[in-house]
Length: 91
Ligand SMILES: [Zn+2]
Image (cartoon, rainbow, N blue to C red; front, top):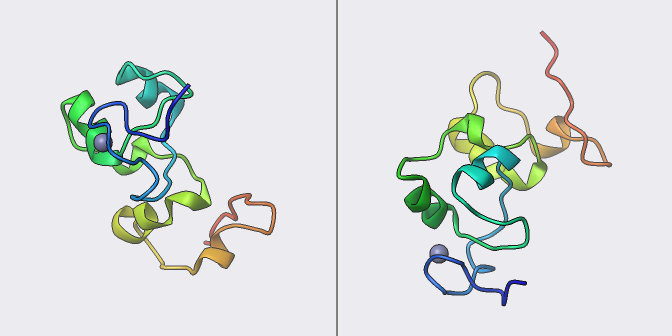
């Protein structure tokens, strides 16, 4: 169980917002599914910076899309439908 705190720095893990990385990245860092970890503390555990491919296509990752995605910029409602499914960009 987590206590709402980051497993690395022990500070409140809810203040820095939500993100989702792929399961294999979480495992690579040696984290368990129910643990919490800030993005930067995850990078610390991994010993490297995170990149676009580390993150899932979940709408909670919108800051990642804003900074790292390539191609045409779309607002969130054009990237994900009402059920949170990714909408492929038309070519
Ligand atoms: Zn932390």
